[in-house]
Image (cartoon, rainbow, N blue to C red):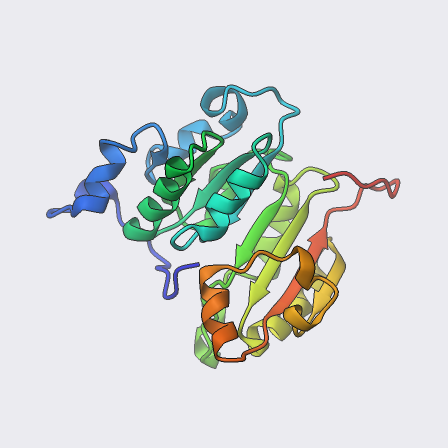
Length: 239
């Protein structure tokens, strides 16, 4: 995920001197990338209008794709799952979807939007699995209010996911991990996997190392990890 993400989002059409990445959205990538005004139009219709898929087709979301290594790998590993990515910054947004297209993927699209407002993009139970990797930690105490992981956000996301779907969270910040975990416990989700050192845990074997993650690993920094699940009331699980 790109660091230092904006809390207020500017409109693409208002940019006076759009760079090559901004221009790519309305040219080569117009069928693959949607700006902040286009994206809300497909609320409730991502499957049928964008992916031409039925209502049972999985629709996953990555919040903060960064330059798209995990985004592209997910699309490649799971060709039968549709994938949306959210990113604010133009350059990584374009890099992420280009990475998918270079490997021949057709099951992914990317959106420029503020993830705080997911309810403007998705209807109730429209989403399956959600990935939140290395969001901005906003380390200073006075900045904590800007963190993506808030109880209100989790309650909103829970409402938007199908029963049995999961949320995968990774961060290099122990402070953010402890903050997030406290809110995970207060939320409707069930924590099903948890580690303060992902790469020394039983979960390491299935983990895909993101770009940010590789940087932290080279510095011998531990990666903190949680996986949450929306459990059906009868206890049945499906994702």
